[in-house]
Image 1 (cartoon, helix red, strand yellow):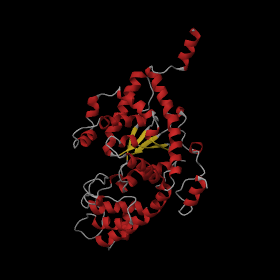
Image 2 (cartoon, rainbow, N blue to C red):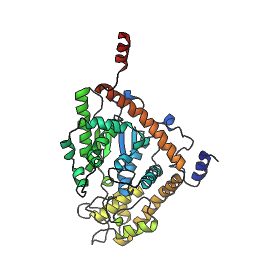
Image 3 (tube, helix red, strand yellow):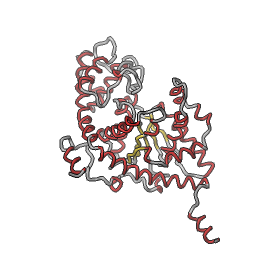
Image 4 (tube, rainbow, N blue to C red):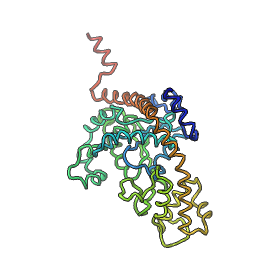
Length: 384
């Protein structure tokens, strides 16, 4: 039985609404993204974002990032997504765990509705042009500029010996973005200064060598989903680095785990349910999750649960979350069971990404004097 037949048989057991067209293995031929035409660079919006494969994908990632990517994808925007595995090795990783984490991240994105038929989706380390452009941009950047980035100070504070990669990874991040001449980058508030660095590097290169890069704009998502809070401390953002696993809900949590985590979620001493982020952050955080999971407004939910106390409401919310996550989990395990299919997606995504980023890198090299243009080659040939 061929890989195609095995995959089709496997996916017959799950709902097809979010599943890819398995026959469309030649993803680039059906791509709605016109990324291969560099002529659109100055006019057409091109959105770039990425996610590291390591760590736990929780509701904060899902609501604040992945669901927003899917929304832009479904609105036929030009979206480029990378699985940023090179960024994940700024700190030591177990090789086998990392290999599996990359496939797990891809399966998660697919299960959440991200489609390689609609967006350009690839694994960062499979596209070598990023690292080459990163070196070039590093020759434009200065060390004091990197040292001023607050994220470096935060991440290096607990380390005795700071890896060089942790210091310079914002330059690689800039190369990721500029390799595709992206015009817009969705970011959290904690990443806005990295986008400012990318903007500065693009401007410096353009000024020094001639126009090459559009200046990318940060899209700071300003909604409650982008600011989902810890279940154990609603004053903090929900985070995969929080040592308390009860602070977050993973997309792969079992029903009993969801029930326990919501039951233990910090609220307050007022029993009724109302939305007041300033004075009732815990309950308001739960209502935000409920709103997304049910596609209902917070006002409608508050009216529906009027008369329920906090204990009863938490039981209701846990059921809503479980019902939302179960189809995602079913599709996740279906995708993960066919590694050959996942590798094909990564292969085709990398081929398309390499074609686009190579054009950018060739242009950069020509401006730097590292590559001969067709005009110069013709002139040299005629002189000989």
